[in-house]
Length: 207
Image (cartoon, rainbow, N blue to C red; front, side):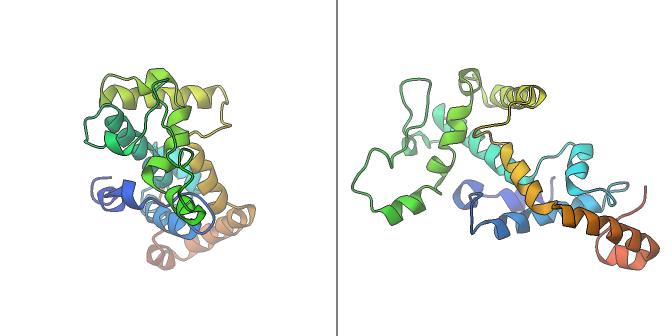
């Protein structure tokens, strides 16, 4: 967490790849860093990535990037990071209004590119948050309310819509295909019999 994540998340609001066609190789490549490191932890190497995340109480890096976007958006809304001017907040429920919908002079190819910008990328996810989360009185309370809202939705099975944690389901579905899970179980058995190869491939199979 201390040595690796800061390098993977530095300036993330500028370069974060949107979860869409054409970006998945980059997203999964970044995710591969955390996948490799969690395999090195005692008792974790034989587990699929999703189970390792659960045991270690971690989220995917893709979800962390969206969470970071929300935190920076909250700071902008409270005007504590000097970025409020790049957003257009409505007077009703502090929603973010898309600049693309209010301008007919922007060419379509520019609009397509603009949808990947921070202010557009986070709009739907921010607007999906309840008002009590967005109206938190501090960053610490915003983080707590955000986590409580996520826990409540998962507990009650509310998953449809633009919730920031849904990107983890997309990432894991692309990593842990049925064919992958079958081949991985065979790979773990093989590496148990060949500890030198397990070490070479960054698998810690000790319980």
